[in-house]
Image 1 (cartoon, rainbow, N blue to C red):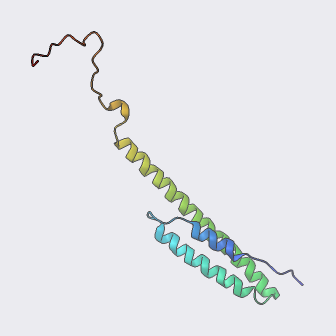
Image 2 (tube, one colour; image 1 turned 30 degrees about the horizontal axis):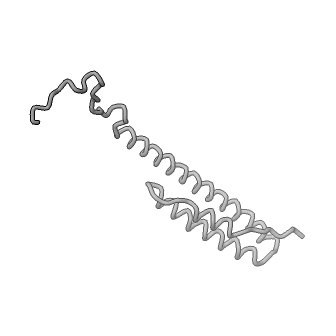
Image 3 (tube, rainbow, N blue to C red; image 1 turned 90 degrees about the vertical axis):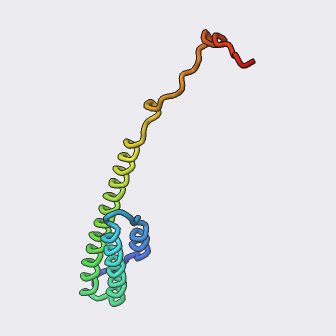
Length: 119
């Protein structure tokens, strides 16, 4: 008799909900999250009947879950890289402190050389 397969759906759900949304991949990530939830639900159903076929099917579902998680992780990394590129581009468009002209300060030898005529 084969040993039963255990799975924690909470880990899968929390990893899917931790993925940030936004950017061009947000729709793809949302679709993958839905697929991930469906796979977790299917896995729980399959594990309800611990026979030889269900254990094999559970192993296949777990592999699918890992693949979907890897896809989500890759898309999230791509989003982070894109956000970093956009921030770098925004910083390049802003003038840095060295390019801003500051008013010239009068040196000590210039102070007092001009007489105020309005006194």
